[in-house]
Length: 151
Image (cartoon, rainbow, N blue to C red; front, side, top):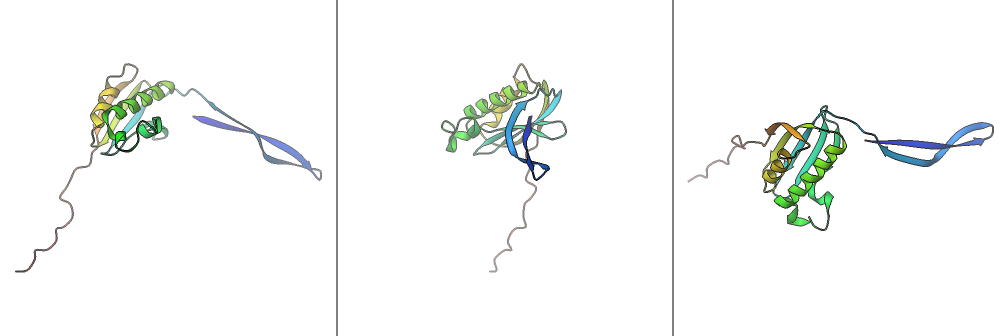
């Protein structure tokens, strides 16, 4: 979590004290200990996106292979299992930084990196996955088909 502190410059104009533009901006992290959290893993044929959230749904971190290394994971290499493992390693480090010990994992979509990412997250020593849920959409019949052509 980032907290922004503005140190405002006070200027006296015509006997009145007003504040002008911020002079200094400080950003710092404070250690938030979250006992449980949700990890959302969206996998497609072109990319894989990890989202680390609190229990109430507030997003803490979002990681994809492209955000880790733009040169190494560009184009079709974003969807590989190697890229998914690297992104899972980064999200595990971020979870450790926030003090997250237990998590529920939601997996959506299909793709080559999905199984590798789930395996990496479930075998992690510092993170205990309590629940693994597959939220992939299922086909249900689809749209109404076109009418038959006349003979």
